[in-house]
Length: 324
View: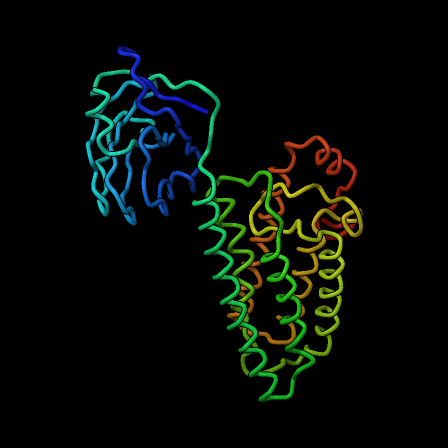
């Protein structure tokens, strides 16, 4: 556990200091907490401004430079406000209101931080996961409803239902995924993952099947089967964002690195062939780009594990054997 103390006086200003060093832990910070117990502190790295939007209580704030010297302090920063941006600051120390006065910590003093890093748990990760899960589930309900209504009205159950089943598998494994032992903190990686998951749920059947429907239907079926095989091989290790939920190398993962994405792409291409429209074309191309980027991001993130590097060496192809 880390501690923060005044380097000159030796007074401990935070006996239990947690570190927020990712985009999401900095963004959510103390959100969701009802109180900030005396003796606790939150150290926001790579930050020179803080917000109090959604907070329930005031806090003391100290802005630090690279040498942990205090450039500016704010006592009892109230909820609903945003602090000034402090030039030269590279991190921020958040403390319970009244701590600055009680400890005598002032501008110009230097802070010492010692001990093992303890990162915030629960609030940021739980809130982010809950929001993405609820959004994914709601969007799927609208997606499935639109296709069920279309099939009921037109009788095109055979062409409309495969994509509904395909997305149902994605949503199911996403909502039941096991916790990760490490998740990419990069905002770009989160954006890529969420775009790849959410875009296909905006596909719509439009006016009905196009002239290539009979040729495209088998693509949907093959995509559905590959996705099912991928789900059976991956189990609950699926995730929307690049994360370590265990290395999977069995089943269809012995053939390509990302069989699920290959199945999705075939299914989406088949859907586009059945229901051709500019809207569906844009969404399909966007999804294909996002899934490819997602595959690259996951490989980069998991390559920290020697076992996965060996897997990359052994299995060369990402989506399609001997092609890509």
